[in-house]
Amino acid sequence: MGRVEELPEYAERVLEVAELIPPGRVMTYGDIAEWLGEGGPRQVGRVLALYGGAVPWWRVVRADGTLLPGHEPSALAEYRAEGTPLREAPRSAEGHVPRLDMRRARWDGEGAHI
Image 1 (cartoon, rainbow, N blue to C red):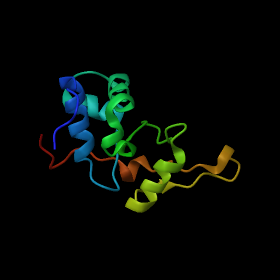
Image 2: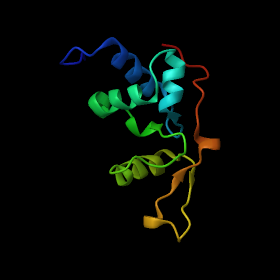
Image 3: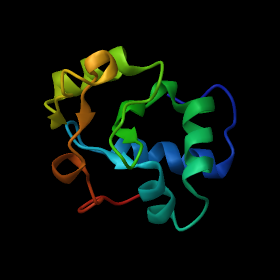
């Protein structure tokens, strides 16, 4: 099933990488830019903000493991359903929102081909 609108080539490439990330694993915005060999974290973030609704956007994250502001509940539901490693927030943390356990959850693209 083709996309209704024509996406810029870079956006297509970013979305293809996002779709390769296995359930329960994540890549950072910078990881994707580095893997593609072009752009940077901000460009990857912009692509996902504009076009990422049809891909597993929750698997593309900030390098520090904090959840995307405004999307925490939906992202957390996906992480829990997929068994993504989380670090529970201390009770003193505002909102008690967990972070991703980047050491365990980060995926390096091993075995993936576009």
